Amino acid sequence: MAKRKIVSLPGDGIGRVVLEQTIRVLKAAGFEAEYLEGDIGWEFWRTEGDPLPQRTIDLLQEHKIALFGAITSKPKEEAANELIPELQNKGLIYSSPIVALRQHFGLDICLRPCRTYEGNPLNFIRRGATGEIEEPKVDVAIFRQNTEGLYGGVEWSNPPEDVHKALMTHPKFKKNFGQTPKEEISISTRIFTKKATERILRAAFDYAKKFGYKSVTVAEKPNVIRETSGMMYRMAKEMQKNDYPEIELWNTNIDAQMMWLTKNPETYGVIVAGNMFGDIVSDGFAGLIGGLGFASSSQMNPETGIGVFEPTHGSAPKYADYETSIVNPIAMVESAIMMLDFIDEKEIANKIRKAVAQVIKEGKIRTYDMMKMSGRADVIEKGAASTIEMADAIIAKL
Ligand code: NAI
Ligand code: MG
Image 1 (tube, protein in one colour):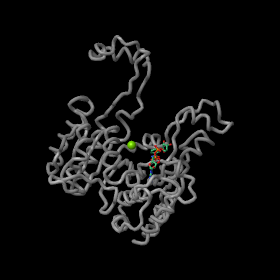
Image 2 (cartoon, rainbow, N blue to C red):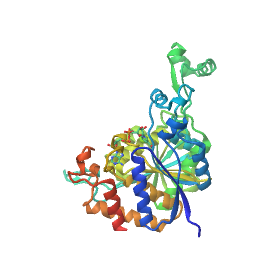
Image 3 (spheres, protein in one colour):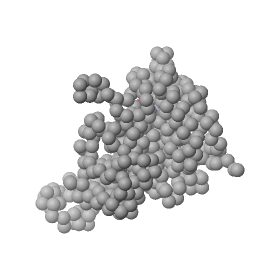
Image 4 (cartoon, rainbow, N blue to C red):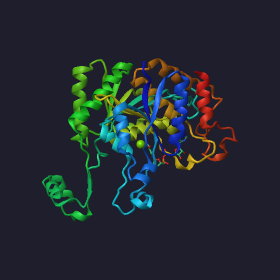
């Protein structure tokens, strides 16, 4: 059989080292693939004026599955100043290549699992009823709508006349904002479509069914944001009643959910939310299982079978040039495990999952974050494992 082809998108900073080490783990686990490197990130913005060149889009279109490290983004002016002289003053405006990838390929299903590893010193603990220390086991899968809502990019400061006029037809706008000069108003819209809402809900319910979770929680704010959150919850109720009667549907408000996070995180199974609330609630849960060194994600379009698998952390530029890399590769390795699940390589996925769990449980090899150190070059001298040593430890358990 022809070797499977995987697009590798290392990007910038620590994205490069965590991806390189993850590919070593995949090879050692017996996953046979050819990796085709795609250009993405700051270097391509600087030298070509495009952080996501068309050739990279074509590569992903052809091969469908990508592992992605991280990219560096900078504010508009700074980005323009770093362009090579030939590209200066041509009116090029920087925008994030990740958002561009999501929008181009309609990667509207974002999954961020948060599971406790036994023995991880970063696990959340709390006091029980009689003062004893409890370490609740978190096993939550968060489904975040990835392309719409408050991050959809439809926004204005000093909105155009016709937009303002349309808003004035809304009684609440007229009453509360009608006296404010147009120039003093900024608006960010929150648009939900039925199609995308249906897709993210269905993905969440299907996942709950497939992996035996007993509940799906909609974490929104339907009592206040009646039209968008309200639509999502109403559709979830319909869907649960018609297609998933065996799964419980829970409804929490996002603010209360963030409070309950530390009270009873073990109670939740699958959680589904719009773009921004999904972003917030997934970071909240990630904090309970070890933070950025452990937070993985996938972005998928189930119709086309295109999937991009990446840690949720960024390029951490301050560690990028360390002679010995100190960052934790587990979030990237976890993302690769999700990729293996997606392409039905369950056996290899489970093998790596088990190896990671063993390394964490043994506790002999720990990166600086797991030792609760501040990230500095001397953490290795102080006993922290390097990125490569962590990958070695995982490989040794395979
Ligand atoms: P970051 O995630 O890169 O780093 C924040 C801090 O988290 C680091 O300084 C480090 O202390 C810790 N950290 C991150 N990854 C770690 C790992 N694997 N192991 C141990 N510790 C880890 O976020 P920051 O500093 O806000 O952004 C840096 C750059 O990354 C920016 O240019 C930002 O735009 C970009 N970014 C890119 C993302 C992506 O590619 N998906 C996501 C978030 C930020
Ligand atoms: Mg986030």
